Amino acid sequence: METKGRLSRISGPVVVARGLENAKLYDVVRVGEEKLVGEIIKIVGDNCIVQVYEDTAGLKPGEPVISTAEPLSVELGPGILRSFYDGIQRPLQKIEEKAGVFITRGIDVAPIDHKKEWEFTATLKKGGNVEIGDILGEVQETEIIMHKIMATVAGKLTELKSGKYTLDDQIGTIESRGKKIPVYLYHRWVVRKPRPCKEKFPPIVPLSTGMRIVDTFAPIAKGGTACIPGPFGSGKTVTQQSLAKWSDAEIVVYVGCGERGNEMTEVLNEFPKLVDPKSGKPLMERTVLIANTSNMPVAAREASIYTGITLAEYYRDMGYGVSLMADSTSRWAEALREISGRLEEMPGEEGYPAYLARKLAEFYERAGRVKTLGSPEREGSVTVIGAVSPPGGDISEPVSQNTLRVTKVFLALDASLAHRRHFPALHWLRSYSLYTQTLDPWYEENVSPEWPTLRNNAMALLQKEAELQEIVQLVGPDALPEKEQAILQVAKMLREDYLQQSAYHEIDAYASMKKQYLMLRNIMRFHERAIGALDLGVQLKSVVGVKVKDRIGRMKEIPEDKHKDLEAIYKEIDAEFDTLGKE
Image (cartoon, rainbow, N blue to C red; front, side):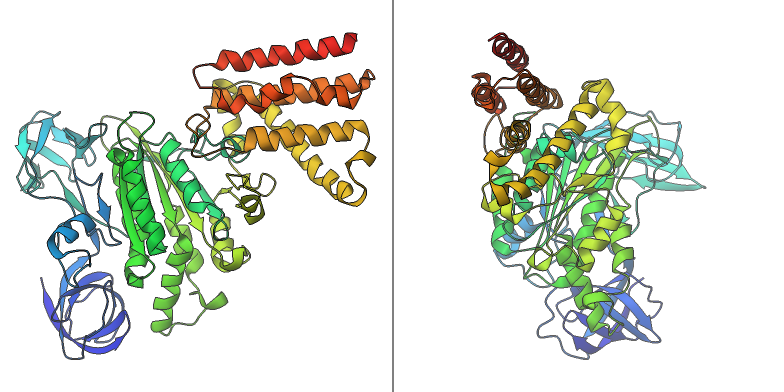
């Protein structure tokens, strides 16, 4: 039921409307003669305070405000994948076709194409009872993703037919509480309301990312949460793109929230060109991009995070593993700060609203590996990886600290590593994961029983190296005992031959868990035999000069189908050190 009011006050993206009868919090309204999209965020008496998702320049008091009496929602149905959306699910490609390269204010374009016909195959027969979440049928959305059409109400399925349909065509009917409810290929969902599930599982399955430093020292669980804080130029965006391309999630939702325009353009241009390593098809076949650049209105930036997580939950409910990349939540928090300032709320730390921690927690808590509603029984997950851009790289500021409080994995980007051309520029001693112990049983069963011990020993070596570096800076490496010089050599091998990884190298960009295990085992075996040789009286020069050391340095270039070559290096290490011992 639409109701009409009038504008009485305008303050940037925040406007005040009077006379909106029966207005509810978070209702979507159309503001002014151009019908700009807005949302009621506060009601004081007869005044409704509205945040407008578009530029408010030129608005004047007295213009009409129309309430739609519905909260901000997204359309969920086939056609979401391969799309570029703005923060409130407006399709940027369709807007460009209709209005040119600049988004016209007040433009109204359907988020998914209502004219396109989809081939629907029913998987349930009419006459039976259905529950919410039951899969009614399937649509081949892209070449590699099968879209499941789910029941949105419980009742008796009185009609359901296979065939070619547009989104507005009725595909069936469900009788619920004496009413006949039509079934379509799509439905709407309120973005601020999490989609329900039957059960949340503990984080005991890792998200395989193919990045050695992440999988080894800071593993992310499927359905887990991770944050990547880092200064400008340290590689946040490339790290997220690498995670999007190589992680074993089936669907990728990338939210560019308040990023620089040229950086977002690069993402929009690069993603369609990326080839999905699993299928050989373009990565866009299983990706949806939400672009909200820093010069777009701040209110839409605040909504973009919720739009992204709702789309991710929708695919999770179909039984897919989804990874959501939010780049960056700092810009989202800045939007909250600006809106809060215009609402004249009491500021918290550094001017951010007092409810910043709650908002961040609400967002990250929507991640998880779950048993979905409905039948057949299926499992889906949403893994949230959020980038944080603290001013000056100082992670003691409120957004970073509140994010660290709710996320379980901290991937610490270090500008000094980036300057030394060590990529990914994640610092192995400052990064951590709180999932490590719960994931260890999976690694022991699926990778190797030795994995946790190997990883712990490697980390101990890197920590020992950090201690020794302080002494080296004072007296030089030659003053150290030979065993400690050997530790420095092995730690260097760990850093350069294992942790350093090129995102642009055709083989090195991705390392399977099996390959990571074999590589780490070789380096740790080298360390074990080197210390043993020194105990026998072999000179350090001879230990460091072994030929197999060069083979270890080139392990990362060995293809995935040649694991036997990595096993051969292990035997070479033993053979060469046996010869040294005899000599």
